[in-house]
Length: 257
Ligand code: PGA
Image (cartoon, rainbow, N blue to C red; front, side, top):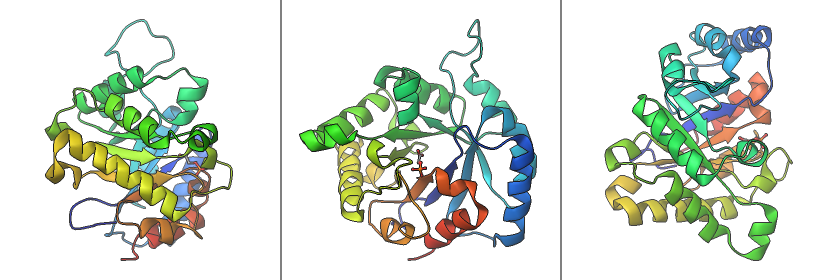
């Protein structure tokens, strides 16, 4: 983390978990244990059908509500999709874009990710842009090139002004939901390279202001070490964000430096 130049953001990604009733219960439990957090932003991205419930329930534990997905068209005949304007109107601040599960199961490509990034930014919200390599890609030695490509594509035609609102989440696919975490060195190296790609595109001053998260089996045990790395400015947390105590432990780990 480097608090002087950029925000630390601890964000939960609930994926397809938690009913509205469970969302309320989670908020009540968090309210009981969560201190006033000043050292980072705390966000939870919830299933779309629970956004309104979360918006009310998360007020007191002071958790910012995010969405897990968006469609890039402004409106029209796209059954089942949600526009950025719809999310912004509900008060959503962050939207996860290009999560590897969406790339894998729902045919998202670097091009659609870029369109979604623009839709989110144009609606005044902040995209959390996910990038990451598979185990096979890592073993072939193409991680750096692949991630650079994903970052450049996602940010295509994004102005330096708007880049300030973008968060990049490095999530090695082989570490998601598997209990396998990247070592802090592996995670730090890729996050440093991501900042290098942004520096080449936008210059050093802009690059040092961008929040880069690590995601992939982050938990109370490994969070402090991962978050202590200079270029890791937060976490995108799946499994451990479903449990109030674990999520709080990670939030507290971000208070390390
Ligand atoms: P995980 O998920 O923490 O359960 O590995 C992270 C993510 O996919 O965002």
